[in-house]
Length: 204
Image (cartoon, rainbow, N blue to C red):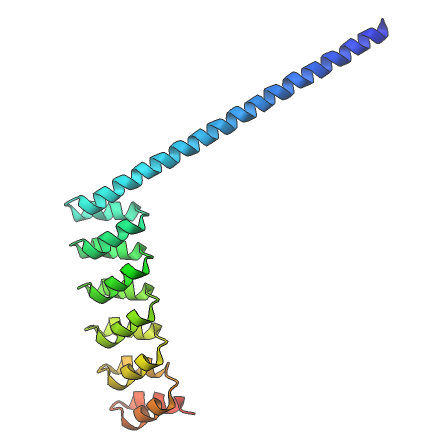
């Protein structure tokens, strides 16, 4: 009998252990399911919010409200539309600040009528052809200088160093030049002594 009681006690403990284990497993599954549901709901809500932000940013007639919407956006396609088309420069500027699309950034850098927005776009452009175009043609010296500072194209740098009417931009170009013939030309002929000095120092 004592042995039978011992066996029964052991069996009861084993059954109790199984019941507790199953209960804990059920709790874990329930908790995991709740977390998954919560994440799904949050993702859906965030997606709905982004759709609202996009609609407001593109369509509201109050620029201050559009600015708030843009500040909450993450959608690059919407940023591109706003950067290219919004009539308010502050709204466009906010969009350009958040843009990563190089094609749109190049378009803005080349064509926006606000020099501050062009400067932001140029600071983010990596395309050397775009930077060359801006360095040679932009009407604003600050925008041209930003482009020159990012240029590696030696032909464009030579052109700028020889022809730009702003001595600070010529100096920036000369500081990146490696072409010895162009440096000699500048050292002999530039009208500004600082530019001539810089060119002379870079000659081998």
